[in-house]
Image 1 (tube, helix red, strand yellow):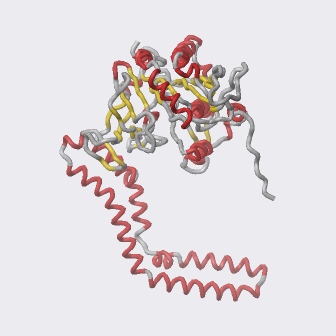
Image 2 (spheres, helix red, strand yellow):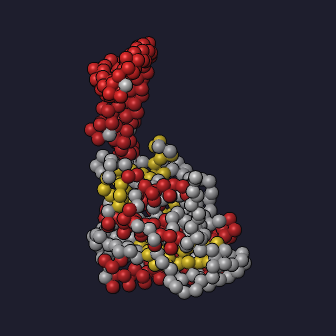
Image 3 (cartoon, rainbow, N blue to C red):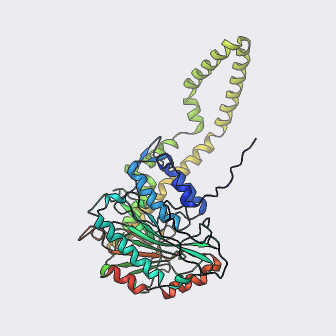
Length: 455
């Protein structure tokens, strides 16, 4: 009998509060996000990178989180939750909240949710600094059109976490979550997310950076537009659907200092060679070894070992039914004879095909090397811009820039909590709420956000 699990009627916060984070593989969260089609870490844990330990092999799908990593992941889960990806890992305050409303109803804001797992590592003064800055963003939101939003509840969220490195900027966030028709079960995307000191992954494509041969992270920045609303950089366009610019971000930095540095065209191509051929060409050597012998040659080479395996099988059968051994031996020999004849007939074809496959594989790396060799020194050092995986000239519309973190930008100068970078994102609201989100976009106090990064 097949048992179907009934959908949970608990709120997202209640569901997550009951999870045993120590037993959840990283893959479970990843697969959950993939089902939503929205895999993106908005919360840039610049000084609290995830730690994993392999259980069986090196694939992340079977890594388990260490104790310190769980604290970071729970905080990251908050941000993903506010964008409608996974449930919120925080308990709301106990004040009454309206949990049902009509399309034109205006209801009081829901109580603030604060996710602060590991925040005891902050001093009281540090926590006060973080809460004061997040509170300032909330105050701006309360002065916006969302003060009287219609048809949905507004839930402010604060997110901060453990600090593990006081030499690097500390990330924290504010999110303006919404609940369509005031339903606590609604998991739509937040309408406004304000990230302080985020990692470049927060405004880049994909779910993780590229790692080059030196172990350095490379990021594929989303397409830039002309900077608007006083921002240092603008990525994508507001309410642009079905394009590679549909994700909209405004990045404000102190004195417009860049948090990233460009990766050169040569560096990008050398990453592609490394990614394709492996460190010290380990992948290339493995492919070469695999294609060096045809299936027929491998069959012949395996004959002694195969004969030993067959004899061991016959011995087992003999213990159960001695009369069956002769028939099994004859059947096996017949099958093997047919197989060897088939492989021998195909040997010439397989040899030619494998030679072509190996040449094709080697040719990819050779083409990257040829591209580098054909470039002038100025071209090699110019910034890498992509459309797909291919390098394109400067000025190509909607191209993706390849960048790396600017170490000087993320290094602490006065305090880990200073707002040196503020990233604002506005995930697309559902159709009926879009007009109100557009009013939020038009009337929000962007100058105040800029001033936070430039006090």
